[in-house]
Image: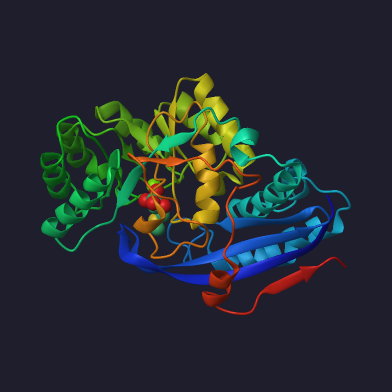
Length: 370
Ligand code: SMG
Ligand code: MG
């Protein structure tokens, strides 16, 4: 297809409740959307980068800049473009995977809409609905945490993930474990807040029969994850560290991780995410779909990805109302702890233009074919 324009939309969307992690607290989601306008129709992609470079080095303004000055011009200058050719087209830019993923996803959406094919069908989905978990932020008190978790349990979520940090770990985990039914799935995510000096402390988490501990140490520090995985019985799961399939294979072979959180944005797009899934499936490493507080646009693609056979654990694919009072697309509604995989062409969801306009932080930036 030929791309005639790339649009950058920067939106600010209020969250239904603040979300606090070991690296900060957010009350809204500033999100970058990319729309490609092509000769076969339009496509949307959502960039998962946060407004600040605290989860990863990428952040909204950086992604905008990279798309504006490098990725969009490359796509606009190329004659014939497909989602499959995007990674090659973008390979002259080092890193910036979240920016690349956003535009590649928009291309894929346009291409599959034109072909009348869904993301799920294209990725290789084997399920019509996916098991959902929920990621619960650091709360002001244990009582408020239990209140929030109880609400999610009542809604039917099949797995609870607690954000932890030094000073907010054993006590909240013990309290939630006690609240839940025996055998309920519970896991924790540290977002790199610990060091190997905390090894003895982290070993105490073994008492709570957790599904996994996610990313305790900084992303480059594979060696410390190897040491921790050998010293505790709770499985170690990497998130931030896994930026490509090759990095994942390396971490698996070194026994730094035995479960992997797959986020398409973090690895450069859904095509690479499928490749990563396949590599894990081949090695019998369970994977689950991570989340980045996506709107319905990104959620639709995540739910389709989570329907692949290797996604055997519930993902951070929560319902729209866990995040937003109103979603940018038709809402994703939890049904018996699951979300349905969209079946329509492309992402299968429709972007609500009135909300894109209402939440816009500034006028749309349109980059045209030269
Ligand atoms: O989308 O439900 C969601 C958020 C899931 O906890 C979540 N994401 O490290 O896995 C993670 C975090 C990254 C985003 S924190 C602002
Ligand atoms: Mg994480």
